[in-house]
Image (cartoon, rainbow, N blue to C red; front, side):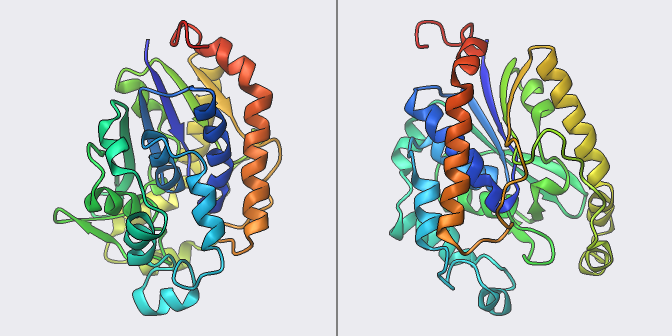
Length: 288
């Protein structure tokens, strides 16, 4: 049997999942493959590179840095999160991403993006850590209204959460028969239609299929969550999520708030560690 990690996005709510996976890495619980969406991709790549604590470290360090995330960046670049600083300067110079470790690991790492011309999800396998991998991650985390589409290989991409926020089905289709699903909303959460639809329609006026995906996103998302909890009951998935809504904004500039959400993820991971080990025992005999 093979193990997959499925990491939902949610912007800074993703620090909850970062706390969870840091605990798992500390206990040598590692997957055969990861699929990350938006923040799940941006933070999840550190699992394959083996860099415990990196996600919370650089987010706290640059929380109030206008080069990282600011209205100024939105005005100057068309992106709330500055593309060059966040996806090239930070991983290449300021908090170096371990490309060698990433490339040496046999773990597979998938990133989910939305092709805005087709309105469909694309699941990209990042086989090597390079500048193009960071562009795929940037595309996965590029939210409509506050990001420009990311051009890669002649296609245009935005946030993977527009089309497949929690890609458990994808991992099962790839043959991963046991999956840990990390959610950033509590179990009782139900997504409502976006209040920003009129602005989204205008922003995506050249891409009607992408807007259609946004318009239907809440229905697809809620159906996916129902499926995930059904799979959990059937023993085909293990779900970790916060017990209550996380007290953090999608955009957060207070490093202490970031730290609190990260520590909450660590706490819940420790609480569920024994149950998770029992679930994974057939997958990882002799290591738990």
